[in-house]
Image (tube, rainbow, N blue to C red; front, side):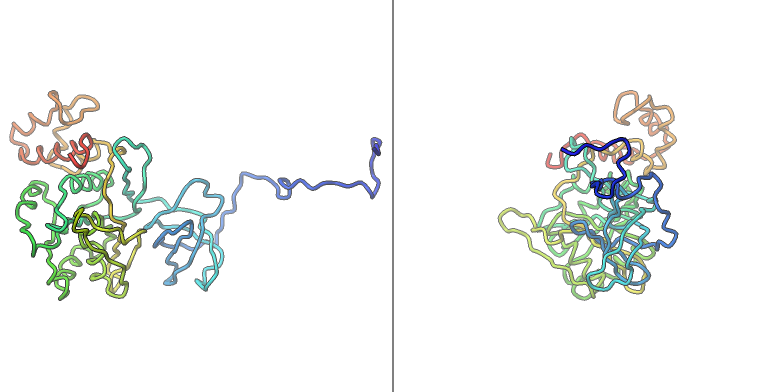
Length: 335
């Protein structure tokens, strides 16, 4: 074997390149002053469709984002090929700070949070009055998630031609949640879409609900030029079939707002919810919490809200509604 001295300057010495040393290492990332802001419309297997200056551009997450992910509704900074031409790919190099984050977990004992949408300011909870039967526990859980995220809830009740909306609306009357009741004839003639659209103007609204309630049918009526696939309810199980497989943000006609159609859910875990944030949705009860013990669940003997209501500062029905919603964190949806 050939041995070299202290000064191996010969031209025939072979130097093996270091594959990890081809690029200088630095913790300084490029600033990308030329990055353009975009809105994430949908995410599909690592590819994100973004709206940039009126064009849809396909992009992927840049390495400098690390584990940080972008979801539908995110405002992002994008570089690269922004033409939107076929087979082009841009890079998302920043996710801008979010104004709101709607989260859920698979179950109440699952610590892994899933971000449903970002930057929405309203949550439309769509439920059928029959076929399939309404699931009040799921409605309660969606309401808790909305209050926790700082979103304003909207109840959209479909299929009123099959059952009356009265009993369900009565149970939520004390919450003061706005609502729209629709039936199939109104969906067909467009009047249902007009009444729902009146609540969506100037907002980014996420639509949630379990499969088969008519959520995507309603979205198709609101945005006629984007006809998403719809399903039917299984006559044996009473459950709908998942037809929406990924969330999609759609602009309302005339750029009057945004709707985000999300896949049907069969559970809405609340492991991440902090009761102190939920009570903020009850401004008439918030002052009464000042006398609560530390880390009060607002449903225990020492809770100051009982005396606050007894003194006439708030309607007892409001306190009942708050405690009913908070109890959904301790009670599984099917109970």
